[in-house]
Amino acid sequence: MSNSRRTSVYYVCFLQLVACAVFLNGFFPYKPPLGVFSTTEDLPSSVGKNRLNGKQLYRRHYSKVVVMVIDAFRLDFITGSDRMPFLKELLENGQSCMVSAKAEVPTVTLPRIKAIVTGTVPGFLDVIFNFGSSIMKDDNIIYQASKHGYNMVFYGDDTWLRLFPKAFKRFEGTSSFFVNDFYQVDINVTRNLNEELQRSDWDLMILHYLGPRSYWTR
Image (tube, rainbow, N blue to C red; front, side, top):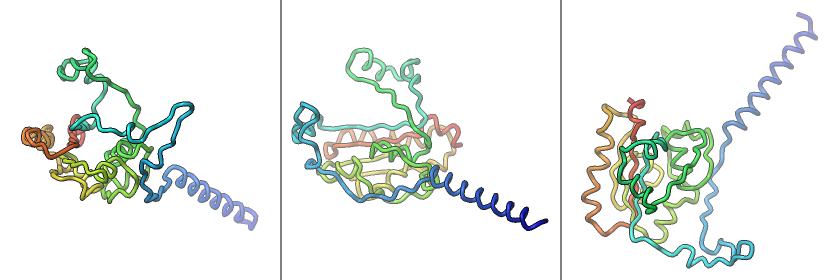
């Protein structure tokens, strides 16, 4: 092989390495935690011609809130069937509202939880961290609720407990990677409800069910 051809091969290989590096940096960007947490003082005093009152805007309207997450739960499971009659009745009577949100990829557990609690779009690199998530250091609603003295309880996917190890007054985590059947994990979540609903020492309850995802997890 002549020197000119060898140089061309080296040049092409170098360009391929650079192209791969640029692609990986763009497709798997690393977003370091900012470590900055917002306060009511960060709110703007007005939006357009409308003035904002931070104390009124974040005034508590309900004594208790229950957040229920069901993995792989499609919209038509509610609108197109009668398997959730109570929720469907609330929607038809105008006692509740439903908003359809489009989930951006990746749709594995850790990135979706981050999207829910921070309101940001997670990166593809979180797919790797999904198997060994650590404490969340970005601003999020769990931190804000804890900071303002709200008592929280949690039952469900133990990824939440790795992200927020000291946030919950009571909790029981279930592993989503060791599933022997289609219902036992979700039963482990529901079995705590009757006792918790009789208690008055919590403000926010989070329930995370595997739901339909347990079918393909197995």
